[in-house]
Image 1 (tube, rainbow, N blue to C red):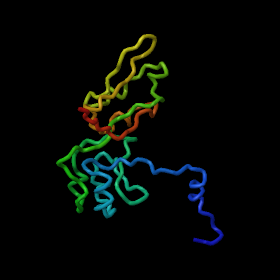
Image 2: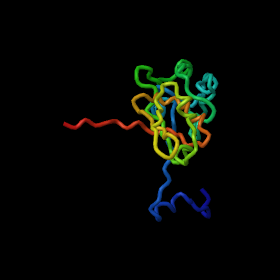
Image 3: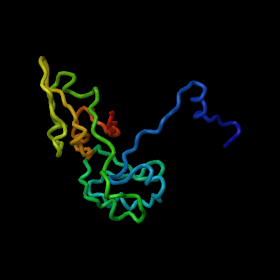
Image 4: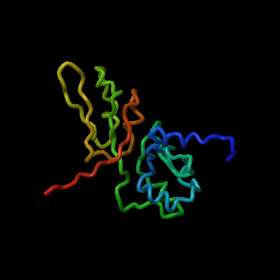
Length: 169
């Protein structure tokens, strides 16, 4: 690094703010730990995906984008991967859909496109007086496929890490 260059990333320490990397959605049956440990960044999974939702991120690791399509759980990415990145014995994803404040229904506009697109019927609509029904996501039913993300005209649907319920007793 040039001696006269300033590392702007260090300034966040002084202000108490730090930049956290965005949550990456990894391909189904892979986890952040397995991708970090075993993925070589060969990119074989990218052309194997028939939905074209896998791309290599800035670190050269596979990440999903549900902007145009959803995951069909075909398993093509795991079949072509030469490394032990994928574990098909577990759940495909650790995330569920999350509907944000930009949702049209929350602003009084009738829209149920996310519920119509959901193959698991995980998005239901709760009726309310004086406005359109509000969407609610059932975390138990949501597969994390991302079908609702691509169809939302307000870009109000995102993915959030599945919260594990802790048993008390």
